[in-house]
Image 1: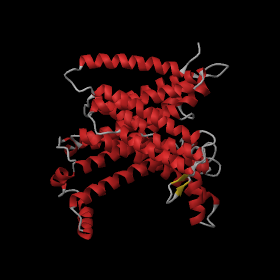
Image 2: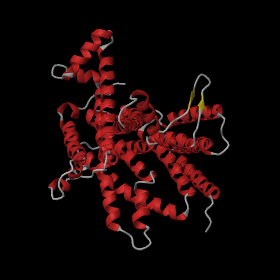
Image 3: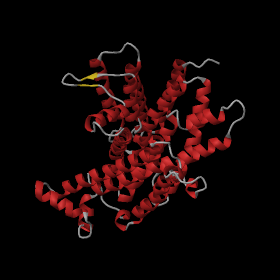
Image 4: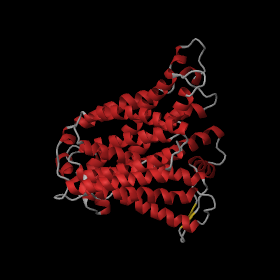
Length: 434
């Protein structure tokens, strides 16, 4: 049977029209937020996807037109996270994601579509498990959980959009200045070669790799910070809430990353389940488990820590009153307050937000760097024995280099986040400070 995108849209719009009529009959005494949310989510999804197509269609080389399209995409993107109630936000984001998913599946061939469906179903299982693990500390409404999860999925858009600009060599001309996005590795190479002329090759490679991961972490964590701030502040009543919101956003981000990146779950399906000889179920599950535990935990720890510091900023007044006598950070805040003569609450908020972003970016970048380091070191060592050139019989060959970042982020991350959840001042319900 042929699959027609236009016919499917007509059928779905007809269903939506019938649903809208039914809703209007059922909600005569209520404001029809759901109908508004469905319409807005549909308009924004088609608007953003059509504008995005301008960048990837051949022959579209006018940098002024592309710059205007970029500005409109940013404006529509901001509209997607409007100041509505939880239910309205969830339906807007859910409708937007539905249409984006529909278009992705429509563009795939049948085999690719089945692969993506399997990858999505498998990736959803660890996402649900992670949510249940961290929601046990502090129960949240289902609407809040869905809102943060959807927002986390959408926070992958900036890094994906930037990647498309780089792949197609797009130049944006904003009249006063022009931008030509470069790949992270190339930008890092140019920076290192310009700053460290004459440095040894291995040192330049290591520094360039580290810097490229810092840039990636910067974009991803700022994106998660933005959606957390836009969606979480109005519904947050404790610092624990902010931590949980950050964690759920991180889980949503990791879920979208796992199913959109062809090297992750989609690649695992292609490599292990579509083997013509026989499917390698064990290989598939081991790779899925490794990525589900380790890389998900990196996002969870990074954005969970960011959520903690953002919670401090949201409840700055009450937190400062309760803890200023026993917190070392207030010494720095007081010093900046005296030097710049700014209100202490503003200084405190700015300081903790900057600290949270710095910690999140550092945690994220360091992990990516550590797991990649064996690939750029001479000889590509995989164990401690390889690294130190130990004898073949040495037990050091049994200790993988990846074991150390794995233990640090999984075990250390659980310990850190559990400690933050159980702190009395973080559990206390507080009034929202806008």
